Length: 205
Length: 202
Image (cartoon, rainbow over all chains, first blue to last red; front, top):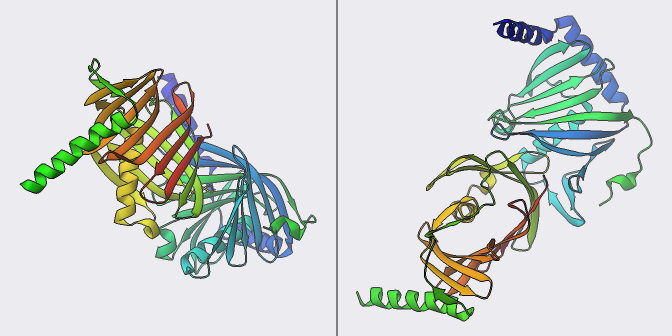
C-alpha cells in the first residue's frame, strides 16, 4: 500500500513537473530562439538517436554527428552501429551508405521538399510559424519544451508533432518527431557548438 | 483435363529434378515438422541494417522484426533517420499492413514483400519430403501454396529456396549464425532484379 501511495505521489510530481508557459514566457522564448537562429552561421554537434517502436523491448539506439552551415546545408552522419551519412543540400539528398554513394532529387516532390525543410529548420529550432503549426509551450525546470503540430494534413500524415526542447540560451537540446501511430524518433544533442568554422568540404559528396 | 494432367506431370518431374539435380537421395521422414529458429525469441528485438538493390538502384534502411506471441510477428522497415516505410503484422496465415508509405503502396510490391517476409518469420513447417547428400539435409515443404526447400547443414538452417518447375526463384541465405541469430541474411530473387541484404546491428 505504501508503495502505491509513493508511486501515485511520484506520478503527480512527474505530471506537475511539466507546466504550460505563460504567454509572456512563450513570446520571450520565441524571440530568443529566433535571434539565436538568425545569428547561427554554423552548428556542429554529436547526437544520440532513439527510435521508439511501441512493440519493441528497447529503443533502437544510433549515434553520430551533425553539421549545419548557412544557407541550409545539413549533414547528418551516423557512426555507430553503422556508418551512413545524408547531406541535405539545395534540393538534393546525398547519401553515403558505408561507402556506397547515391543521390535523390526532391524537386519533383513538393511534399518531400517540405518535410526536408522541416528537418533542416528543426536543427536550428526555428519553426515558430503559426500558419504551419499549432504551437504549445511548456517548461520543465530550466528547459523549454515546445510542441509543433503540422496544420497541413499531408505533412500531418507523416509527422503528428515535433517536440523541441531548448536550453536556457534558446539552443536546441532535443528533437522528438512523433508519428501518427505515436511511435517516435528522439534525438538528443551533446557537445553542440555554434558558429565554429565548418569547411564546405564537409558537405561535398 | 488434359492440361491439368500435363501440368501435374511437369510439376512432378520438376520436383524430382530439383533434388536429383543437386545430387540428393530421398530418405524416410522421421520428424514431421522443421523449425526455423532465427526470429523465434520473443524477448529479443531483431534489428538489421538493410540494403535493398532493385533494378540497379540501391537504398537502405533499418529492418526490425519482433516476435509478439506464438505465430505472431511484427516486421517494420524504417529509414536510417527513423521514418517508417512499412509496418506489417504476420499472425499465422494472416497478413496485415499497419502502415505503408503511399509512394510504395503497390499491390505487386506488397505481394513480394508478404511472400518473402512470411518465409523469414515462419517457425514451423510440415515436412513433405526429406533428402540427404553427405552432411546436408534438404526438406521440402509448402508455405501459402508455394514449394520451398529448406537446406540444413550439420543440423543448422543455411538456406531456404522457393522453387517452381524445378527452378529456384528466390533464395534466402542465413550466415554468421551466433546464438540462434542469423547475423547476415540475404534474399536473392532470380526472376526479378531484387536483392535484400540484412546485417544485424544489435
